[in-house]
Image (cartoon, rainbow, N blue to C red; front, side, top):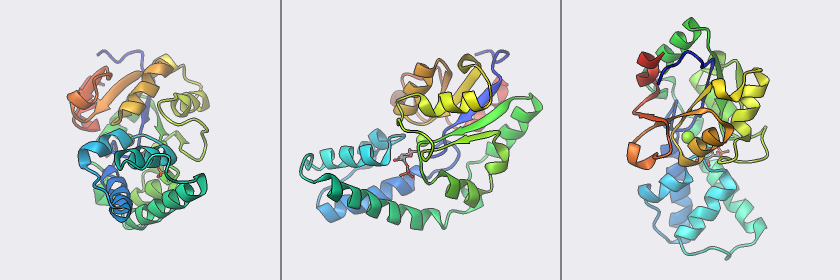
Amino acid sequence: MENKKYSCAIFDLDGVLVDTAKYHYLAWKSLADELGFDFTIEQNEALKGVSRMKSLDLLLGFGGLSDRFSQEEKEKMADKKNRIYVEMIKKLKKEELFGGVTDLFVKLKEKNMKTALGSASKNAPLILERLDIAKYFDAVVDGTQVSKAKPDPEVFVRAAEILHIPCKECIVFEDSAAGLQAAKTAGMKAVGIGKKENLPMADLVIGSVDQYIPYL
Ligand code: BG6
Ligand code: MG
């Protein structure tokens, strides 16, 4: 994958720069425990990159509880999950930033590439603050600024617009199927972070973002 025509790297946050995916899982699992059903790590794959309310719908589906609750009840459940999650995130340590992330950002700057965050999370500002990484981004777009969740491309297109960069010059780093789909729909290069079998739609799959350094 040659890199000459790329001028911007857009990063998902959860599961790409930091393993907050495990905290999302634990928080949803505590809700599932309370509702009396099992929620497995394999089922959690489907929730990655997906908005909070859509995640709740998927979770309730796994528990055979779809259409059992009113919108108000579901909002209360999602709030409860979020409170559990935020308590975990408040304790996030700088060392939890994945290894090599800082090296990649340094390289991207050396190559004069712009960087952006494109996250579905409404908690992204807190995570950026805990990890002290807001300084690495030329633009930040998170779940508080978009109306359509991934796989809609809005979050990535918005980031490219802020930076005045054509979508075809952007590379997206994503750990979720929904996010990779969003990148492809936007006409961007989609680099999957994780296992090939979980991310068949990616243009390239690597185990962690720093493994992209040789491609720069
Ligand atoms: C994504 C996560 O980044 O953000 C999803 O991969 C999560 O698991 C979504 O549901 C929304 O996050 P939040 O923090 O706003 O509930
Ligand atoms: Mg993610």
